[in-house]
Length: 270
Image (cartoon, rainbow, N blue to C red; front, side, top):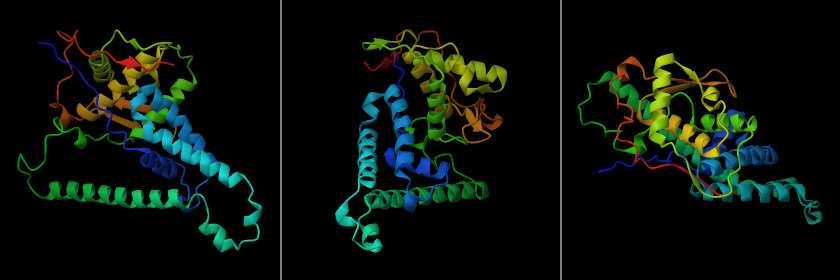
């Protein structure tokens, strides 16, 4: 009986989550979005998401198109609007609908974070029964990436790719290395060295399928195996570190023995 090792990419919450990350990272005024700047940054992230999984990016492509349309409407002059009062112009601002969506999303996300903080405080004050919370190893929706946001990792991968000449693949092609092998190898390296720089994990790697495999393995270590990632400053190096002592008894890393039938990863056709 063979075991298939799968990677769940549901942690990519959606285009509004990415937009909110860009707004907060650059400390932008959400009510006066610099569309040209946001559209360019969003497009850079979209390029990386397409590399990871083409099936993932449908909603992100739609948002990129929306940003491009808003940008063009802001740039192109409309003589009929020149005689309209400033207040009316604000009402007809092509950014209005997007800003409303973003403000609404921010409200719900902030509320979710507040509830998580209250839950953490409650757990520190009161003893918790074994079955108070669901088992995160069986429920991917409860997985969290600590300290470094998911989009920070995607941004770091984008910077890695900017410095590389990535081999172009003209057809769908299987990587000979299953993701479980990357998980085991990277996990063992991080535990042995204490911490490993994110960028060094991609040194001398030019095949796009291997780059994807390494990145997905890092996500798996952070989400399911209690590994940690820290970043001292925006756009700085990200360090991958082993679990804290209290999580040392977490899920064991994949065993390479008998993993030969693990599901290989595929890269999208150019």
